Length: 279
Figure (spheres, rainbow, N blue to C red):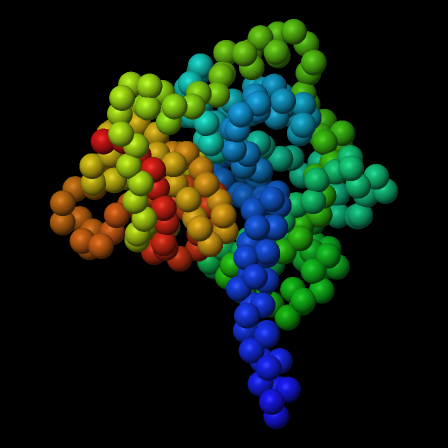
């Protein structure tokens, strides 16, 4: 009896660590997203040392194609941490385990509300439901909202639709799109960066590439760092406006666009978040 109680107690203690480890691992996975009108994309954050040229080479996709999938990017001032859509063509996705794993990137997908196996396989990927089931045997019992499934591997060398180029012109174009640390700039200007946490909301809509937020007092036009603590995901989004008084419940501290919610891995229309901003 005592042994059973001790065992249950140990399992209870271990559960939070297992969840944390799973979330941390999930943060490093490459997820496919379906965004209108681009189609399938992998979202990459612009981090220190990352350029459009390096992303172009990594995924074997032309810089022009990346720019077309990100019409709101401002030349010369891409915010550090800003999500960049990397368009993915179906032909570059392999559903068979690659013989050389280092030459491919495992792809995953988080099931969204109202999505079906048929839609994900046939409409998004152009393959059969049986193909996805072969990669995810449990899927045969049905999908659940938020379920993470394996969709195959991205093989850069298989992408023949607007592949990357190593020409000097491509490097020159990428040089015009520099990553900028706005937080450092705000501090240099003497502005105070505030930190808050609380209830964030979003409304389902067209999943386009606009990554923006609304906040009661943040400076419109500035950039805010938003974190989903559950999945350890952080991104930078533009403050498109202030929340009009009375439009939402008083406890709502942040409104995010559908694309921000998806990039953060959020499914519920209300979620806990942390954010850093200037007023």
